[in-house]
Amino acid sequence: MFKKSTKWLLIFIFSWQSGCHAYHSKQDKSFAHRKEVKQFIDEMHKKHGLDKNQLTSHFSGFKTEKKILQLMSRQYEALPWYQYRKGVVTKVRIKEGVLFWKENEALLKRAENQFGVPAEMIVAIIGIESAYGKKMGNYPVLQALSTLAFDYPRRAKFFRGELEEFLLLSNEERLDPTIILGSYAGAMGMGQFMPSSYRRYAIDFHGVGKKDLIQNHADVIASVANYFKMNGWRTGENIAYQAIVLGKNHQKIMEPKDLKPNVSLKELANRYNVKPKKSEENNKISEKARFVALQNFGNSKEYWLLLHNFYVITRYNRSTHYAMAVYQLSQEIRIHKRG
Image 1 (cartoon, rainbow, N blue to C red):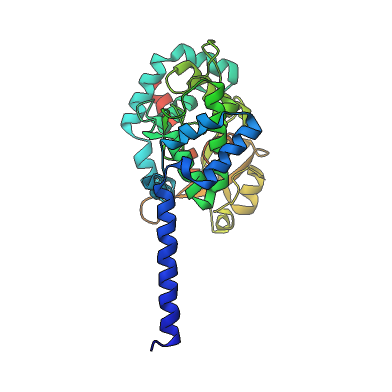
Image 2: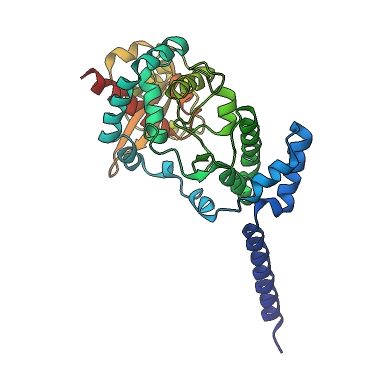
């Protein structure tokens, strides 16, 4: 006769195995046959008037993609800064950025004049997001968003909202939602816009009544610029200052939870012994910034003062590493274009 502890252990194992089997059986079904997806379809019909039969047909062609769930746990931005930068701010990306700028110079100039965002910033975003259109993702967006909406509990609410936005976008722009490809997280086009951003910020810059962020360079360039403008970009202002530090007071502010600038350069210098590396930048004592220390090779650190426009870049992607890579790539592209 089993001891009680052994008995309960076997019951637990059996229950766990049964639960896993049920979970995987659910994932192996097409989305259209799942209860929660049927409820979602009903909601889309009641809330937005979308055709239930058509939605059911769309969802019937896909089931959960397990690789997407695996990729969500491997965030590239989590690498140390020096490793992240090495893979993003590359000679190839700089060279191709200069070429993209030259090929689209008139469009970039027009967008810069209309939205107030420097051309190099627009080019850098497109370069990092899609290698200037060469790497826009190979996952069906409907499958990616459905996988994350219904089988990724940690952020299910967010991706369920993006799935709703994607279906509305497809309806508005007369797109077939079953054939559009994007990233494993459901981002689309040369600028890798999530569906909600596509609907909110996309611009018909070529004036044909359709916002095409997948193939049309005019729309892509204007939409990236509009994204920055609508998130508070300040024309003519700086983005970040490289900093120097004295003593150890700076350690109190090295890892801010929020990158929104809130400390003046004067206070940073007087209270924390942190100041811009270039002497001419020290004159702007009332300008507000955030201080960060980025990990270089070994134990060395790279110190930066992040300004308002840097914060705006993080509205595109909240990673400090991402925003810094965009900034540094933009400067390299601008320098190399000038020759």
